[in-house]
Length: 561
Image (cartoon, helix red, strand yellow):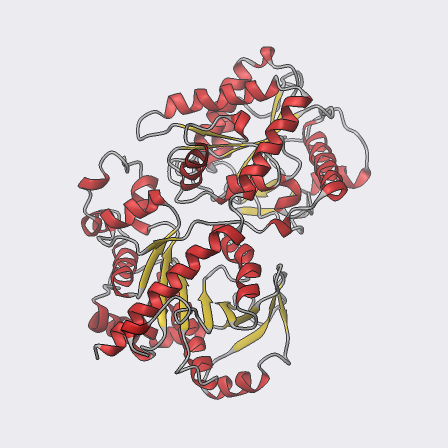
């Protein structure tokens, strides 16, 4: 195809590979990105979409994956002769797209050779890699081999084929394919730059000095040189470099020295959200379960009008604003006499969990109502490192351990993934979220912000900040600063106003405490209305734009050789 004659129709993909460490591997926000847009993409490209993920289950059963040995059977047999160890099946999500899970362990033996070749081909410096660097790269390489194998087996050489790599963990594979299968167009999406996250997480002011930071220099200072090198070189090499929000696009331009070719805002799939009576039933069951667990833990009974306030996400105290949430609860407790009703704060943040509490399980199994607390009545699961855990330490140091039965503010810390099998709630995360009245995510570093989008999708009004991609998007929809009565409160945040943000969150909880049912109905409706503007059916066009850019640039690249 002549590059000059390419048009919008001709640049539509015939086949898409999508690779991520979080395919059928629920770890964080990228899982939500992929699992919610899969249905929309699958409808646009039926059976022309293949997700590739790590086989972390090693032949064991996955709760997210259903193997189908009849699917692509002849290719699976051929791939085995090429040394690939894969399982093919369906992702257990709306759309049920085709998934290939690959065992990446055999490729560790080739690690040094691969890193040496990446240095020669693309200048990727892997010398200082450590921790998860090797594991991610061996998966990334294995995923690229899967794509290459199927590409050649299905004779896709004359087709428009896109390989979409998510986050730095899949960069090496994208670079491998660009060299070995040059006709395949490559897209790389950074959901958060490794250097930006590291600067913010190490307590350095990211935003005021963004233009002054040198990404390479900072990566050496913060000891993430290998990850940054891989991510930076991939951003420059791929056919289309993308990120998830305007705030992260600025970060990419400054810290990776490469402006983004497109912004792929993260949408949501409303088929995850129950409707009508089913919604009311799920919300009622969620609150019943929350109050049962809280009673068994604290010995306090919670009335139906209890204000349930939650936070969740990655366990990053500063970046995700967990420190702000805790401090706002401390301030709320100090002025609790002004509250009209009890407040139950639920922190669902995965930590170094050891096991569900047996004493709590026994109380829940009894079906009784309790009037005495358990020992450590803030924690639903035991931790390996309870004494050092940041949330536990804050609660302990500030006397916020539910020891005062008369206090109107109670806190429970749920330090595990809510996958329906946690041993205490035994409900998935969305079935807990739906029972909350208010969700709080006062992030300092939040490239997009799936947790607030998930909240409003489930009709739960929420708090976010002006430093989150979602917060910026919400303000853009309103054409002004969003308030909680709009369904989302976007609190102004910068490098230095932590104290003001804590006060603002405390005031918003107090404001919600005073809402009557009529106001609550209006606020929930506005939250859901905002979520409807962020459906994948509206945002998927951004992906199609990225695919067109990648295919056009791949054609130019091939024509130049």
